[in-house]
Image 1: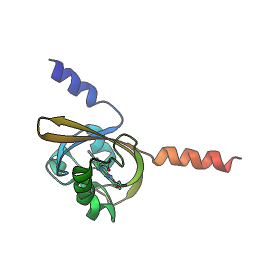
Image 2: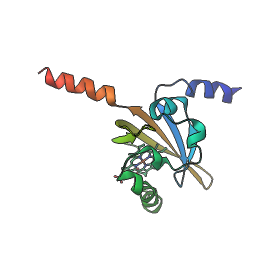
Image 3: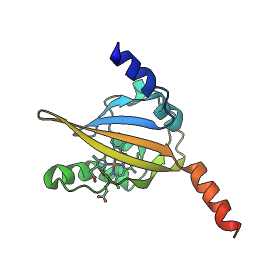
Length: 131
Ligand code: HEM
């Protein structure tokens, strides 16, 4: 089916794809998200996306969502940002994050595309050091 084909494609992209509901609860967790963060789907479904980040964002992320619902003024949506992620092991790592919004009637979902930026930053550092 079309859905099965779409799942097969999404399961094999390198970037992590994470969908949350309007309150930040994880609704979809891709295999790449498991590779990057070390958590299985069962450990993350319906959990707060804030579990994937260190302080101070961890305590503030619900407030970020509230602010967006109130103001509809995007800060990351549509532009993206480099942020810090936190793996299950507790290790922190740089992450390139982009977020988009989808509305179905009165339901709102956010989809995040996340890439571990550790390697990109290492290469950037080497390039800078070479000049
Ligand atoms: C807003 C951090 C993951 C959805 C924000 C903001 C920060 C942040 C700092 C507020 C930006 C500002 O006010 O200037 C992080 C970190 C993440 C993470 C460190 C590491 C895992 C995610 C994921 C999603 C998501 C995976 C969606 C699936 C949102 C939404 C907003 C937001 C919807 C509000 C809209 C906006 O500010 O554009 N996040 N986030 N975040 N984040 Fe996250």
